[in-house]
Image (cartoon, rainbow, N blue to C red; front, side, top):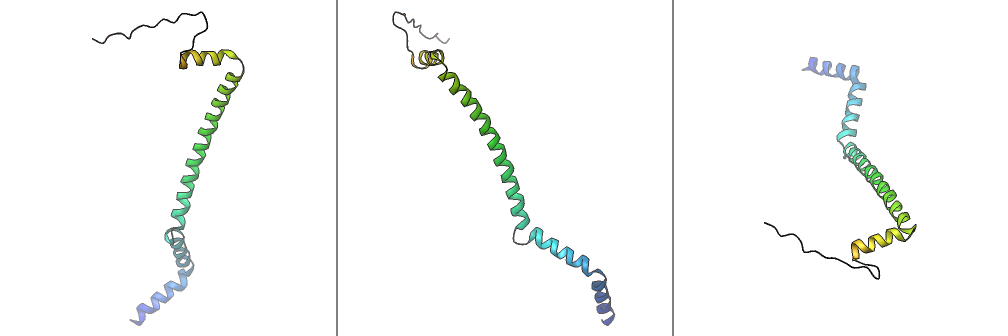
Amino acid sequence: MKGRARRAAAFIREHWGRILLGTALLLVFFGNGGFRSLARNFMELRRLDAEIVALEREEKELDGKLKSLRSGDGPVERLARRELGYIKKGEIEYRFPPPEKK
């Protein structure tokens, strides 16, 4: 038994740095969720960055449409005719029944 204890003590003396480093790494990765929390936060950051890029793209598109609508009567008139069915005074509106399905 004494021989085994001496060998264990010698092993610990020789490799105490590696044992300490291994224990520290185990605590960092698996203790109190530190590494998991870091990985989860990193993934959330990537998702939010992608969402920001998509929202900025949408904002540019909407700004372009807004400038187009403010630039003159053409876009407003086109929207009013298409969406609301407006017609000018003196125009005749023709309506056709939808085609019958066979």
